Image (tube, rainbow, N blue to C red):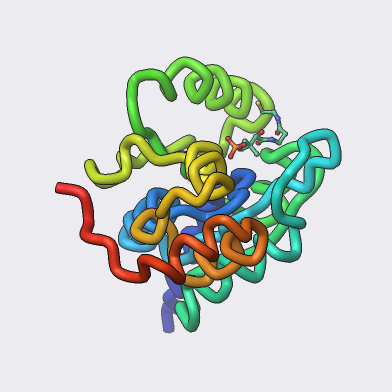
Amino acid sequence: MRMTMPPKKRTAIYPGSFDPLTNGHMDVIQRALEIFDEVVVAILRNPSKKALFSTEERLEMIRQSFNGNSALKVDAFDGLLVDYARMKHAVAIIRGMRAISDFESEFQMALMNRKLHKDVQSVFLMTGLRWIFTSSSIIKEAAQFGGDISDMVPKPVKRKLMEKFPLLADNLQQNPKKKETR
Ligand code: PNS
């Protein structure tokens, strides 16, 4: 009798700083989940980069934002991304693309990763049009001065930003329902 092997699980790693997770990241994760059996969102533990949120806070915000999807895993890693991808038996590294300005550094990183590990493919996913101008940095910058970033981040991230930035908390408490920009 011929035994049929179960199909191999196709895992992709979505690496980044996620300081913090934005709706643009969420959009990329949802698209990746449509293609791969398992997506591991992996935060680089990078002591040389000053972050607003600790790695543990960032992991927790991602977990809360994706509450209950078993195909999504959340983790942190040190060192080379390709070593981590190898350890996870990942077939792909996901990166989100917003605009042409992202292209040059992403291209360089993808080719370096391929040089270091030829069996993992870089897959670039375009974020939804409404997120092409968002980034963690610009959201943090607006939030620290009280700018309403409510519709750019998932709710657990908004709550944590309000904890970090009293001006944002005051502003959102005074103007809880702002109209979305057209
Ligand atoms: O969200 P970011 O900051 O753009 O993510 C960058 C990240 C974490 C994906 C990248 O810096 C990385 O993979 N670092 C791990 C070290 C590594 O493997 N470097 C060699 C490839 S360029």
